[in-house]
Length: 161
Image (tube, rainbow, N blue to C red):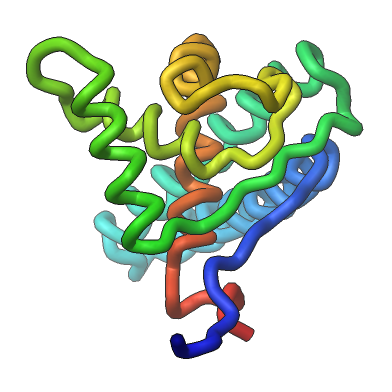
C-alpha cells in the first residue's frame, strides 16, 4: 500500500474563525470602497465585490450566533474526505432516508460526516443522528461550515503542504 499524508484535518475555535472572517470582511469592504471610488471599475467587478462582502458578513453573523450558543472557545474539528469516506457517507444517507435525497440534504450528511468534533455533538452519535443534529443548526452556520469543508477538501490549497 502506498503511504501518503491524506486526508487533512482542521481544528479551530469559534473565536479564531470569527477573527479570520472579520479579516475577510474588512478586505471585502476595502475592495468595495476601492471599486466604488474608481469610475472606470466594471459594474460586474463591483457586483462581485459586494457579493463577497455580503458572504463575509453572513459568516460573521453565523459565528456570532454560534459563539452566543456554544461560547468562543468551542472547538470544531473537520476532516477532509477520501473517496471511500465520502462514498460511505452518501451510501449511509441513501439507506437511511426514504425517497429521493436532494442536494441540500446531502450537504448536511456530508458535513456531519466530516465533523470529527463540534460543540453540538457529543461524539457518540452515528452518522444519521449527527446529520439530524447538524441539520438543526441555522442555515448560515451550515453555510459557514460547508465553506470550511470545501476549503479543506481543496487539493490546490495549503492543505497539502
